[in-house]
Image (tube, rainbow, N blue to C red; front, side):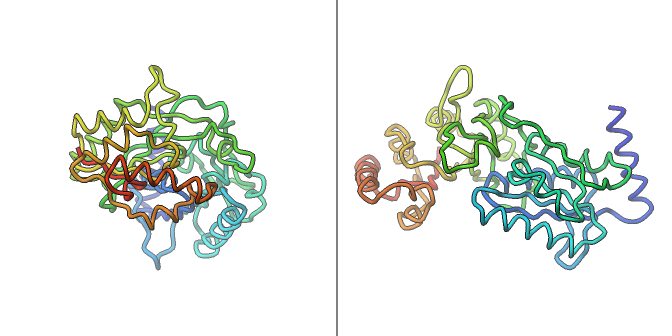
Length: 318
């Protein structure tokens, strides 16, 4: 508590001398990154920061990076350099997957003050405010993400500008595909406890939202790490029965991880599907699969649901 008070006192002192500090967050990559950026923005707003407009320079710039492909890593570096040029007086914080996997590469870019991995993403406001001066070379705050075994939740954003807020309920991946860096960037699969998911959905409902998008790095693996073990179908069944929200949407999910029980449950709900087949075919999750393999899935989904539109993104109405 003493450390927190000291941090807040320093912030109040600097604010009173000038103005409410402004922040800017640039987000690359997936919906999970978008959720986490929204949560960090909410933390900063609670501390008195205000979002910078497009033409205003910022006091704090955060780049939430992606590294799922070589191109994504390049775009992350470009975004960092662009913000440094546009905001020469700002503190520059680089976080996200590229910060987790390649902090030494990021460190080579002049003008960065903090490099923060996923394990301390929720502490970004405290880390920034606790510094008397901007460090040079940049400080690196990074844990071995593979040692993380429990789901770490950023605050749910209840003052979002989105009509459909994201809620991250799962993080990490256990697949370790030879071509994929995600497990090394995000760690092992970790799930939000089922009761906590329902509680967060209720909070969003009470805040005035009518729809929520459940998201995760490997959403189909939700609950398999919990004790007692559960799964995504069981979570959706609880949501359908308890009705904490008018409408629930799932973000990307692997097509072979849609069990028959889930398809039937969604098709029997009042409004089962929102995404059309054309959108589904474009989803990257189908890229590893041939048309020959996809065809039986579409036939099965059509049989179970009465329509081949029963595919991600899937929306469930209790």
